[in-house]
Length: 77
Image (tube, rainbow, N blue to C red; front, side, top):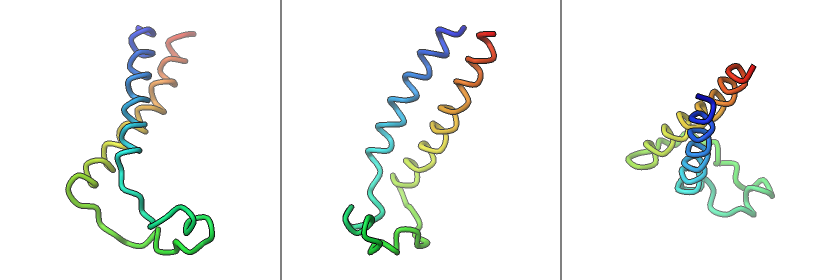
């Protein structure tokens, strides 16, 4: 069972990396984020279409990425 969860964790991590890389950046450039010029980064903008799907999937995969190691630790005792 632990081996299956370990494999699932690896697949989950790869999927999470891909999802994060596929998302569109919220600021125009990275220099604006570092210098504070990207104040509109946290503005109320609504994602639509694929952006919304990527955001929701990222939350789901992120949550499972945190839950699976806890289950592995409990089962390993």
